[in-house]
Image 1 (cartoon, rainbow, N blue to C red):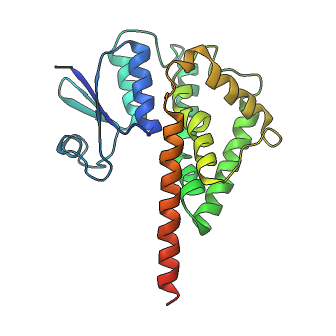
Image 2: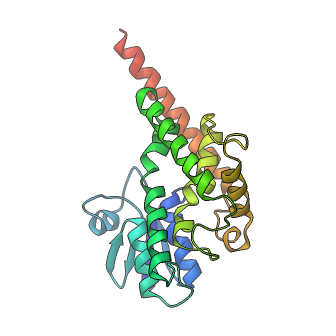
Image 3: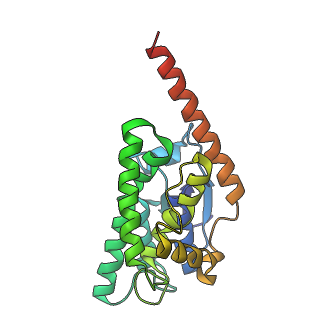
Length: 229
């Protein structure tokens, strides 16, 4: 029986962050796909507070929250370092990872909500993109010359953001508005250190999120119709 298990959703950038770190470290693990609408007793027991994926179970002990899990993997297993060794660089990596992670709600609201929530989300995502466009000029990685912690957390903006745009029809990122970010994203996706770990099911991701957008639109339409009666 595997000592390491990962509970996740195949379409989640947060699950993929953890898988990425495990693969970088060369850790063998058992992946357990969860059902969003029928969460397993193992998930509910392992993360009773948030009841969310991802959950890493190592020797029977659960660790939750993707960024916490990344640091746990880095500290626990042998292999290439995920966080920089230099204390200042490590602090920078944590800063940028938190900056990106703090924008998750805004990203979700931009593509999967309507009305005021969506407009506020768009504003926040645009501000984030302005910051990244400035920060990533002439940069391949967030910190130093090595792919690491912040770059793993950046999978949301590097890959999933484009999928969300295509699925929803809401386009925020253009090479005219954010040329440096777009150049960085293209290099990120095609980097050899990244390419082998990116999800191979982009078409399925797109189909999945397109269906979610349609479902939310139908719920919104039904709610509006009921309110007008």
